[in-house]
Image 1 (cartoon, helix red, strand yellow):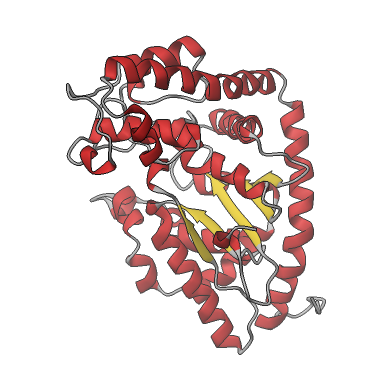
Image 2 (cartoon, one colour; image 1 turned 180 degrees about the vertical axis):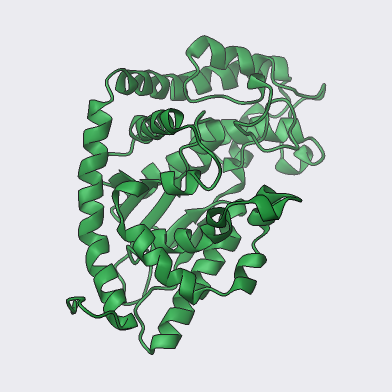
Length: 349
């Protein structure tokens, strides 16, 4: 087990993470999340991965598109290397314990805590009064997603760090209020620099499905020709690659392409520059395109196969939900008992 997921607490080491099924999986999702999920799965620690469809509806979703996007996301997990026999893989809405625990946490969290959440401010914008209550309470449901499995570690990007800190605050307050060390104080597993993927058209902007230009991102459904073409057209600068990372300072597009190469090749940025320092982008881009096609086109092909008959995906999600509930239900029962609910069978676990 890596140092990143070691724990000395009384709790069994367990990783939880979730991704919203918002469509258009891209390279940033793969390098920043899915690839890391596979690595954790293969370290032997218990891994629980979720398509958080309940989070998705905090803003309006077309129902048919949400169903399609949920299945496509599941296909992306599997095609990237998540093994449903090794990891628990399911969609959030099939496990009602998430929302049941979220109500308890709504009563533990304070309004002031929620009002400090910068992501709510960003998503709600100037018209916060018209935002859904679900969008405001989103972090309490995220805390429930994690703590209903007593997850000890969560892989988290920069945009979710504040929500994980709130999860820790909720766990500590619950434990303090009821005088019991019941919920773990979950540790973040922070993404590395090489997994923060920026736009192919603007190295200062994060790669995003919402960018108007499809050329700004590598979609996980892109075929080999499309991947190669987008990399050939990626924005660069006229200078050769440096031989050391400090030479990438103030060169965001160059840094982005080097980071992508390093992450896909499982190399450090230093190692990539030792090999490629002095090369022009006219030489480096074809190398990157060949590597990206080698790594990504099999994922695209497997996603396409899975989406042709979604009954396999639906079966995997249903089985995963059953395994998830086997963990979550006793933890929820014990939480209700601690909180004083009548009619709850005490659980000694």
